[in-house]
Image (cartoon, rainbow, N blue to C red; front, side, top):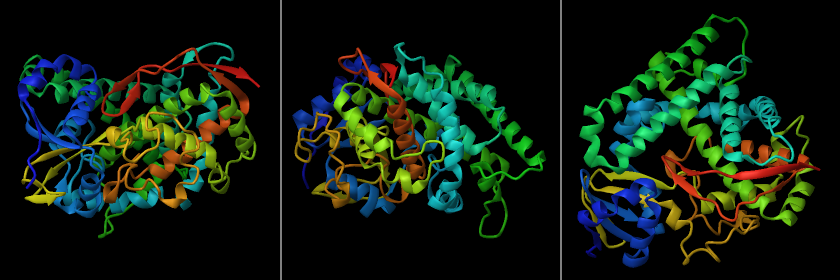
Length: 440
């Protein structure tokens, strides 16, 4: 068996301050020096295998997915804040609820949500002040959150509770990042009461969602939103989802559903703002879309817009790493993975690997224009892969295309920023994206 290169715990501790801020430069230095797969000794966690090897990624996520489970980073650390739903559950519990929830995201059901999505998008984009530079990352966060909120709860009076829910989930995430990047200080986070304080906020978020569910159950009007679909979903024995489980699923849909979309849209709009000619090409495509009455068929025709979004997610994948734990001894590409090995798959590095991408550091808007030829299938994972691929990938794809088309039809977009700073949290965020919108 091949012997893996190793990064010592001392080196990790020496770089801990920089890793807490942004671990990606530390990862890149080691990938460039040690190759596509290596081990790191992390104080408080033990040895962790890091890889950007496409064969290993495919084996773990697809071919041998049954031999790998999500790590306690998600099933325990993240779950204590957002519950045990599709993102954090494992085993039979996950399989049961995946089968139960999947129909809500089938294309025929997404068609019924397009009007709700477009209304939420239009409402939020009306906040743009033409001619004034603003941080579009905050705006896209609000857009994506309201799209999820309105798609779940089509009621008109949810802005205030949703604002509080958004704030709580963001604060919980900041605490979790501290726990993940400094596991040797978890004892202090508990003793100081920091974790306890965040858990109280998480309980408040659950209370907000429970109140909205109660309001729906007391109402007499039928809706076509996601909440109604989830309330109608049944197990094989015909029983409905317990209330606590329903809240778990809703909280995860909010957390994962809005954040990754907001990130991808922000990065996409930054690249568009740097290229006036590209915006004109997108305008010609967007003019074919009736943004007052959107259809699924029309959205599927926005090929260049979708390519622009895909390319932004290549350079800045929202889920920039995926973690798994080996459930039994295994061998991939000559490397032995013992039972219990924690594996971190770096999609950020794989998406920029010079062996698989032409000009990997460059934004090439039409790179994915002919993606139907499956050229990049083994090297591109914006929504994960295998049975645990993001359940809302189609929802997010249509939402993002709708936002970009709506904006380029109405505005010319510019920016004073020469480069974009990233902020790797649970998902890969930009620190800010300052853009200016000028009416056409």
